[in-house]
Length: 195
Image 1 (tube, one colour):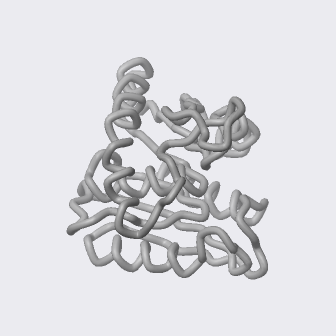
Image 2 (cartoon, helix red, strand yellow):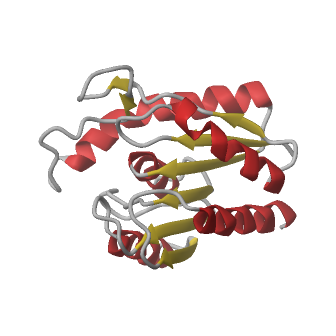
């Protein structure tokens, strides 16, 4: 079985920024193919950074349609990567806006495995995940950008839709990925590899 892993960055970042994460996750997923794509849009703040969708003037009401507009770009990356790697397993690992996109893909049945650091589920309607869908959601209690409560809410909603969802809340952790979060993700991915 070949595993394809896409690392999805947050807003104002790029795929290369997540390269250090590929090393610990490669230990949990020996032989996996890693892709570190850039978001499809230039960052609103300028420079060479990227984003999956604009956060300028973003609201609870308009966020879902922005995510919907970004879906085709992410789906094309997944499809092309899966075909090139001849992968029969696809894992999305996201941070912040990358987690939002990853959880959306899980909720609509595009992929079956997600690790979401500092994410939220902005999917509207009833999730229709794939059979055996699994997710790990990691949030920090000191996160001032995406509250850990949103990770917990996403876990509850996905669980209600049949996803095997695990939520890990890390005390005192701000909007970042910590060694503790990486260790939780490594254990999650290794368990799925053995399943």
